[in-house]
Length: 468
Image 1 (cartoon, helix red, strand yellow):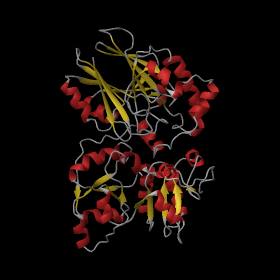
Image 2 (cartoon, one colour):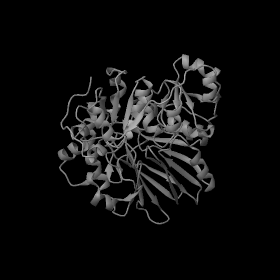
Image 3 (cartoon, one colour):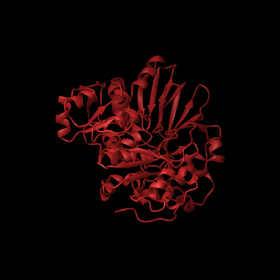
Image 4 (tube, helix red, strand yellow):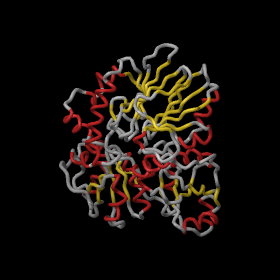
């Protein structure tokens, strides 16, 4: 038996290749859109990928199932309640998939979504009982899957199903069963997923807060409260996964001259500047969106640009194209026209506009001084309402990151804005949107509300309605 986990930093997605080396066959569970890694490992282990299994239809990232099926001819398997519209084999609880000496036992484990499954893996050369469980987004290290990504109105019902799933399926597993989850730290599919990428059933029974003994009604309250912001574009991503993602094929980097790019800009294309921040601050094209090509790009892009808008990339190096392209494709940004091959010096030499400065990083103490100045900035808190209620900068306006694209136009772009979150991560995503909208002065508060508190600065408590 062979198993390998593939993990994507930033969005915290995990996928798996499980194979029987004796018979040369393998399955990929929850494939990412960049499928070459599965093909390379399968080839190195003399395995043929014959099955592609989805533990559910994902809401935080676009699957690579159709891409992998196109390249390998493997069949895709999805639970019948997923109502998948692409060619697939319907799974049911109790089904068994045979991979040579490996048995994949399918358990229907609703709670995160109605169609969620867990794959119990048995190596029959050793024993018939399950050795490990690929739990998808049902059970994580230190957490469980959130129940609200198919709609807030369904959340309490799904939380009740999660309670039943945990008691009827997971608590009955042996303590020694190895748990391989569909997400790790960085994912928004849980409240506080651990950074360790596997665990055991016994450890989770004793130390996972979500598995603490509760009455069902108490569990439902727990599972539906204090949830983090929902992944950007989650409704659209879910729809893409239900319909079947577009096959991208082999990515070819397309360099565009300025003459080639300008007509796209005139038709509404966005320019995504992925260079380091220092380079952007020194010189950039006005109206461009700046998000560095780091492991948070997939999480941030959906809060700064609509996914249907064509995108032209400005890269530090052309070699970054594939990395950036897949970071966007993972969250449904498929309309990438190419990258700007000409330099900013050429842009400027052609008499086209150039800018510098823009978003400024400031410490909490500096923000406190600005709030006492003649023209204090509007402080925009982009956390969730429950975080805001626990303590916020006095006078801060609540605009949760997931609602910011709708609310940002209520502010005056001529007035300074200071954006704050919990630690400075979400605020960086938000400042990209403010920059694109043409706000003249935008501050990103380093360290967020946590650092504000550590500096002994005052807090207000309670909740006010977000700007409508």
